[in-house]
Amino acid sequence: MTPTKQEAARHGLRLRDRPEFSRKSAPLTMASSSMVKDAVTEMAARNFGSVIIVDAENKVEGVVTERDILRRLVNEGRDPATTPLSDIMTANPRTARADDDMLEWLRMMSNERFRRLPVVDEDGRLVQVLTQGDFVSYTWPDLLSQASSLGRATVMRNFPLVLIGVGLLIYPLVLAAGIALF
Image 1 (cartoon, rainbow, N blue to C red):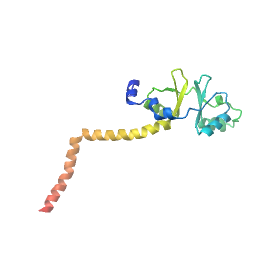
Image 2: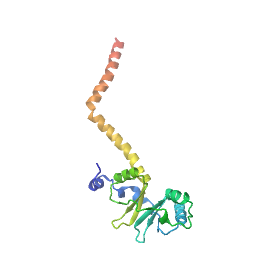
Image 3: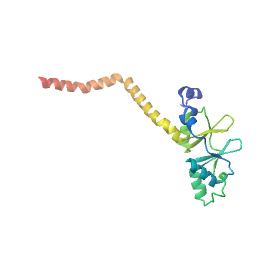
Image 4: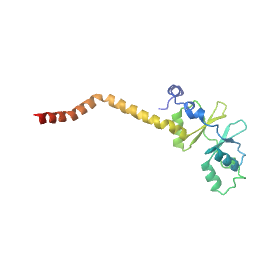
């Protein structure tokens, strides 16, 4: 069952609640008419794996990733100095809102095999880009905590059975120790 926005807000599961949301550097953005060579230069300088393609109002039009550059430029023998980003971008990527449920987006990103999630405001303007790596930093410690809690809950729910099991293990030892003393 997917949490509602109210439940997500109550449990801190919104995209905006990720520390990375406010701490990350501003996303690298460029116009679709920019050349791939310029994008690659900026991506390398900033150590970014993607550039978000935006219009004059900062609304998301597309995404160009390192994989797009390899598949749609290098593999096809195109010239990065004369190829516009619009020729190799993934147009109309999925976008999220800051109050969206984080775990739902993690599920969608995993199932649909995309790694970058542009987050936009109510007017559709780019605010931030979250990656699967940003989610993993949350989910791994959280999964360990949830597994520990589930384990404790399971033991407590079955506590009478656990006591019987421990008793059955201890009884032969006590019996053997008693026999050894006599």
